[in-house]
Image 1 (cartoon, rainbow, N blue to C red):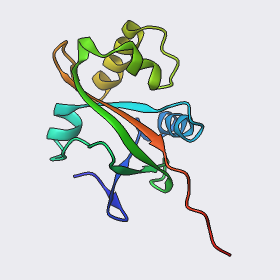
Image 2: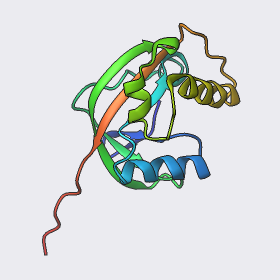
Image 3: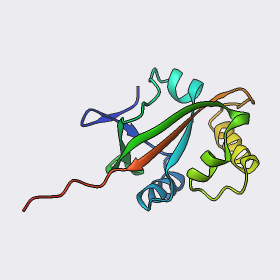
Length: 137
């Protein structure tokens, strides 16, 4: 089960360390508006349901501290080999093609001990950063 903060599921990008910091910073800068997860690895193995449009997630930094909140705007379950260029660009990580996206993600998930196949289901999650609530004096 994924961690919760204030009743909301937590969005932890990448693996702890430099990668998580980089990806979190891209979200906070508005560059990264999508992220990918694997249905069998990230959802089924964790006993989690796929996010739904309108759901809010707490974005955390490398220490697990809340740094922002995102609202899910679109969710697609797609075979790995069919992830779109639209999605790869929305990840905001500088991919130059869908093949580049596939190569990078295959290497990432392989490093976690999971072999991705062409038909492995990818959860393509689009989101928008929620502006912080105004503070009252």
